[in-house]
Length: 172
Length: 197
Image (tube, rainbow over all chains, first blue to last red; front, side, top):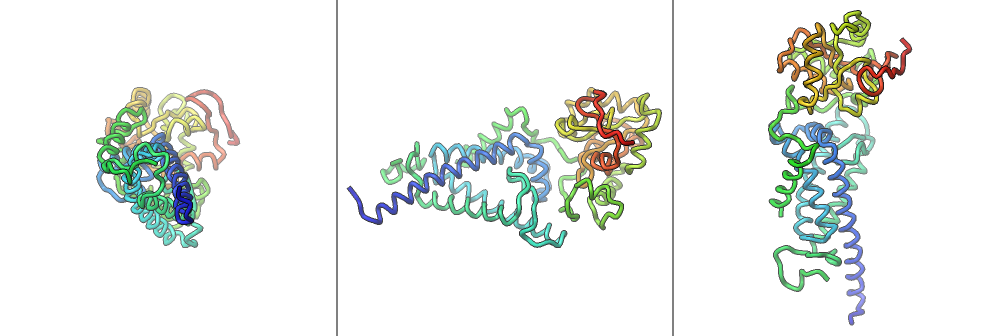
């Protein structure tokens, strides 16, 4: 029995982290499905960022990314390879956020309006959103991902870590 | 894990009925695209405006069309072609380059549906119409929409004479703003709306 305050805090944090994991999983599943069901719309959105000049590369990004998000969402919901998935989310979210930010700056310089008044469809699967709200959402998603990467949210997992077989990384 | 995820993603795209063909160039006019400069990009109001700002979506489209060797028509010319007696006899054809949902929600009466992202689905119905026509007006959502441009290039690539192809730069938003009729549902459904002219 362990009723020390630090232990309770850890337990509370872990429960909250599980909720964050499920939320993160559900968000990515939803966003991925939105894009996968409308691949042409997503293709047009990716094109707007003007990041690739090759149609093969553009098509590959637009074809694979939505399903990859669905994959990550399912893994998080099930609690499989959570830390690996968290790494993948961070690797996706950080550049996406930079791209969205850069595009918003370009729109701002073209339209001469306050930054937070910029509203556009970033291709994130949520339709038109205000840029400041989108950046805040992405920041929270990154924070949740880092939290999972730090080792929280392992309750109710099928398998928390793919490679580690030690007790520390097994589901509670 | 990334490799497994990538394999899952490409596999799912492959089996999905809506999946993208990786090797197809969906943007024959060019993959690269500038950031739209005008506020409310592509909205009917902007397109219909007679005081278009510099480098507006319509102006950018006009420049791109010229680069592609395509001709354009404005709202007045499109309306004239619509009222041209040859339209009823198939001498003038209107091609709607939007997706099926938007087409069914309202298109220029008698226009053929031709989504340039799934051309093989529409070629059997669109090509005979285009071959019979002397003038073909291709349109989409106006503004920064370049699907009409892609559709015109696709038609040209399969042998439709370039001189017959015209892109209606204002598109359906301008058509509606001008009070011209739209047809709901399928082609020649007879279900017309907005017949103020």
